[in-house]
Length: 142
Image (cartoon, rainbow, N blue to C red; front, side):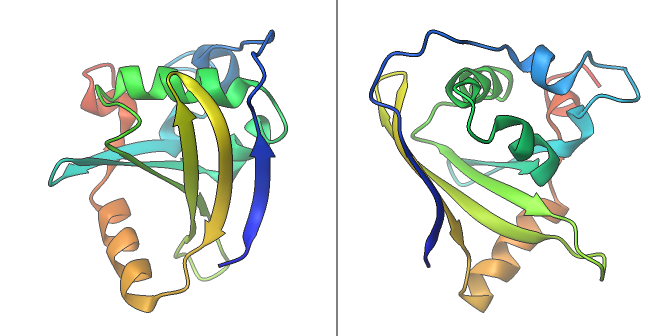
């Protein structure tokens, strides 16, 4: 319930970093592409990225450019996207956090990362994750 991260991004960003700079080149074994997943259901695109990717984005103005690139690759838009961060834990099942973003056009106005407390919501999000595929697989690059 309590937001773990909150930022206000009303200013125009001067720094932009493309998705390839953040994730590495497709096919590179050190790249993070396998940790960016997507699945579609009932008009929504559920996008999952690992805490490793989130760490690269934390505190950077690249978040906005990164998400716009992700939306283009997933053929979606902000209104349809449900974005989650997953953290691998010691029992092998990832924990999930929801990325709530308020957009003003193509600019992030603010965002919060929230815990998912409701057990039914957790199970649904985990099930969607289990059915997700790497983003490059869904667009024919994998």
